[in-house]
Length: 221
Picture (spheres, rainbow, N blue to C red):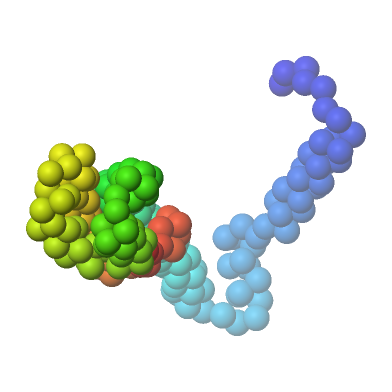
């Protein structure tokens, strides 16, 4: 035995375990003693052997059931981990696509917002009638993007504005920005729909709350 030093608590634990083992050994009954005791109370030796065999079989069956239970538990744990890993991969890919499409949509929206200062500068140089038309366009850009494209196309028909290449270029950019926003919004909606469809699939729908992913995608304004 190694000369290992123990703390008082460890020493007490060792003593308690040694006492328990000794008590079990002292309380154990060997087969001969059991047969003698059975004979004293008139138990047939064959019945005793049958009982011993039955007890041993039951003990073996309990051990086997425990072993099967542990195997089944291990298989379930493995399936859970596989499902968790597969769900993480699927949700991560779908969510990354949503975030990418959201960023692209926000980028084109910001580019459209950057056109407003240029539009306001153009309004300062325009006459009264053109200023009113450009103000209508500015209001549409802020409130109704679909109408802004129509207003910009109408302004391009104004002969006075057609002679101003800066105005023509700005109208083209406004029209193009609305078209790009419509395209990017559609792509974002498609990515969001794919994510939500993925999140509803089994067993991903069970794993999703554990992984912290949302059930639906919040739509931008």
